[in-house]
Length: 250
Image 1 (cartoon, rainbow, N blue to C red):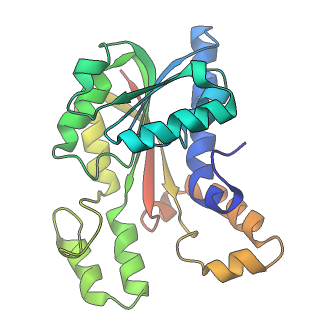
Image 2: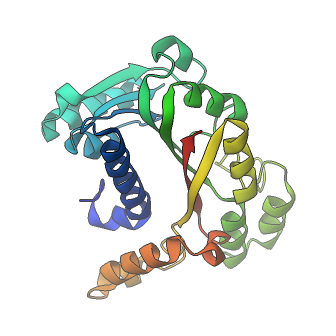
């Protein structure tokens, strides 16, 4: 079961499989079938709803009331309303809405790119974890953006991404910030986390023309299997659109 439709699964399947396995392992370690999960910036429930379908309690904290309304509707359609709590807020207000050391796992997907202070945000997230709790951290990869801009013929932009401290190619860049794997690792360790695994996400999916995936019989399934096989290989991390770190509170 993937958290999105088949075409979108190319972009989410790697993270979902890592997260699902980690939650199963943590539940077994604790001998506790139901975990408390915090999904910050979880929006409409792309991950929250599938996690609730596994039987876990999920609190989604997001600044958008529209996204939270869509989350509640989606949870109702999936029959997991009782397992999902929607809270309006962000990483800065997290200490006000989530008790310290009260959750078993935290999802931080696409959040560090947009917050004012990534270190503070990750620290606030980590403070909500019980000892040994999990963090699923997904963020935009600077080096992947360099490759994507270069392949698109935007060579000056590619060089700008490579050189800029925030990994942006200019004022028109819609992404506020990108990270290298080393930067994410340092942020995680500074927050008291142990990095257990790193995966490259969307290694090929954003580079392969959509027409090939949509029209060639079996192409999407084959590409999905390729993404999953390459995700854990360090050689491919540098070219992935995103990097996913699975970490735990030491």
